Length: 134
Image 1 (cartoon, rainbow, N blue to C red):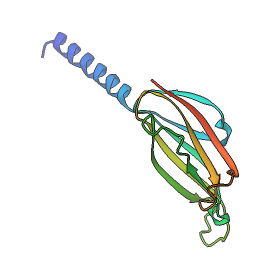
Image 2 (cartoon, helix red, strand yellow):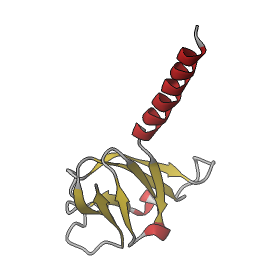
Image 3 (tube, rainbow, N blue to C red):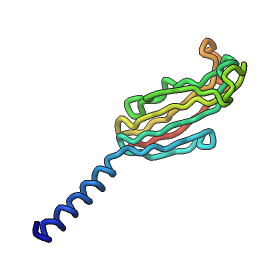
């Protein structure tokens, strides 16, 4: 194989790798310390929000209807107990929410910590994150 062709193919391979890596969605991990912050994302990027929770108290985090899911779509939510002892009654843990930037625009991710059956009562805690998707 001629040297010029080998160099061309190697350069094409390197460019393809970098182009593919640029298409991969990045994930930002956020916690309570990020409450009230603003972030910018590109369409397709994802974020996770991990908040302390203890559903044995009757309280859990829920996504507010005010969040525009056409801009930031909730992919999943999961609770994991902190303790390795799964038989520990009343042990707290973390709820982790994963969101994907679905469309351009601005919205807030608003998570309310409350009892699901007490909809008319002010939440015990609120997590807010302003999002601008470009």
